[in-house]
Structures are given as C-alpha cells and as structure tokens.
Image (cartoon, rainbow, N blue to C red; front, side, top):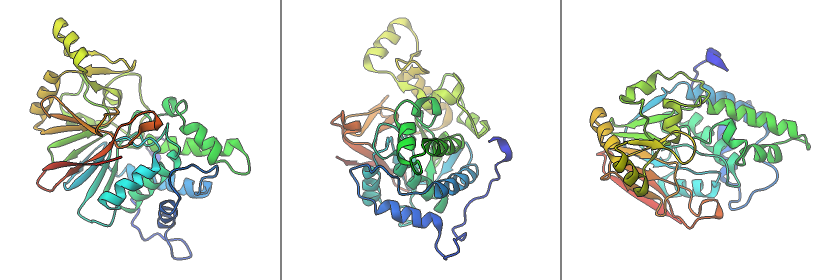
Amino acid sequence: MGGAVSRRVYSGKEDTACGESLFRRVADRLCRQPTGSSTDVFCVTPEEVREICVTAQQTLLGDETMVDVSAPAVVVGDLHGQFSDLLLVFSRCGHPGERPAQRYVFLGDYVDRGMNSLETLVLLLVYKILYPRQVYLLRGNHECASINIVYGFYEECKRRARVNGDIDSGTRVWKQFLGVFSCLPVAALISKKIFCVHGGLSPDLEDIGMLRAIKRPAELPEEGVLVDVLWSDPMTPEEAQLAARTGEHWLPNDRGVSFVFDQYVLKRFLERNGLDLVCRGHMVVEEGYEFFGEMGLVTVFSAPRYSGQFDNLGAVLVIAENLVCSFESFE
C-alpha cells in the first residue's frame, strides 16, 4: 500500500465500453438481490471487486482522516453484514443520489456476524465511489484483519467469492478489502457540532484536530488514539460506581482493548472542542439508540435482531439542516 495510491475521485463519467458505468451496474444488481438469505455465490465478480477496491481506495484517500460533513445528514450505526437492513435504511431515508442535499455517515462495522457482509460492504463502497460528497464511510473495529478473520468475513470471502472452487481466489478478494479498510477515515464532524466515531474517546485525544494528522493507509497499532476511537466505550453504571470510588475517569475496557470513560471525560471533551454531541456505534442497544452523559453522547446501532441472538431494534440518527436530531427506528 503506502502513499503511492493516487488520490483520484471517480467522476461518474468513466463508463465501460458499453456506455454503462460498472459501478452503477453493480449497485443495481445488488439492490435487486433477494434479501433475507445468503447464496453460495456472490453476485459480483472478482474482476469487478478488484476495480471497486482500487477505485474506493483512491476515493477514500481523497477524504481527510476526520471528514467535515454538512447537515442534513443520516448517521448509520453498525450493520454487521445485515444487508436487508441496509436496504431498509435506504428505503426509509432515500438511496444516495435521490436527495442531493442529504449526506450519509456510516459509523463502521460493515462486516462480520451477518450473512451478507460482501453485499453490505460492496454496495457501500460503490455508493461512496458514485457519490463521494454524499456518502462517508468510517472505520470500525471490525474493519481490521485480526478481527474479521475470526468473526466471519474471512470465511465468507473464501466461501462465496471464490472462483471454480479455488479457495485462494476468495482469500485474494479478502485481502483486497483489507486494503480498502486501511484507507477508511476514522471520524466525521457534522456542521462543526456533532462528532461521529465508531467507538469513543481516548485519553490521548484532547483536540479532535489531532485526528486530521493521522496518515492513511493505516494499520491498527496495539494502543493509542487510533485504537481508542475504534474500541472505547462509555462506562456502564456499575463501572461508573467503581470509578467514583477510586477517583478514576478511565478504566480498562472489559473487551480487552482500550478503555471506558465516564461522564466527566465526555463533558470536558465536548466543552474543549465546542461540540454538542458525540455519536458512536460499537454497542448493541435495545431501542437502536441510547443516550449517555446528560444526552452528550448517543450510541446508534442499525442492525435489528442483531446476529439472530438479540431482540433489539435498529435505528439511524437523522440530523436536520438546523441540527435538530431525531431517530428512525425499525425492527
């Protein structure tokens, strides 16, 4: 990878010889796919995946590591391969391009656990290519080889993206997606007031402007700001009680990576950066959204009935041009 990737943004005019954009054809094909089940064969060819991944990397590197987004916007939380729920979000809120003034910010965790990680990821990449100033894709902790090799995406690529039974061809497709993951931004700032990130805050992140200095493509280190914004969580009530007894504002995260933080940390972070709200994903929540810290932080989770093991709703955060926030929930 390295810095040799040129920063070309797809213009929408680079059509195939037949006069039809490869990316539009792939998007149309995916949107016509039957939902609710996973076929053995992925409907996008390895050649198409290669072109999508190369172009997506170039497009993503055209964004800063923390992207600036203007409202109105829809913020979508974790999807985890639940492709039918991604299509439901688009049916409720509009497909990219249908409402030119509306932006989408996706908080990461596109893959793993669900049956259709390939469809979910590729449709989002194609929409990013086609509508680079309307679609913004952030990195989640599952957009990392050490995680998605364990929780399903790697096996899905080997099983569904292979050619003529060649498992190695599926592995090559997986590695191409890893290259894309390393180019994803890690945060978004909506109208200078709403800070979006997959996980949460970091003890090393006082000024959000620090995120703009993170170079991509980027591999995840073992610790530090980049890991924290993908992995950290707000404290549970039990953790907050423990922190209050010890006088600590940060505690080790039970996930085994990064930290949990209390309301004091959140309040100082908002004040220091002139923010109204932190919007993050990373946690399944019963109603699809859940507030923390006197409504200074909201968790948004967009995969209802997550992994077939929960009875949660899904939700997205809808931000009007005047920054009035509401939620669209779905089963």
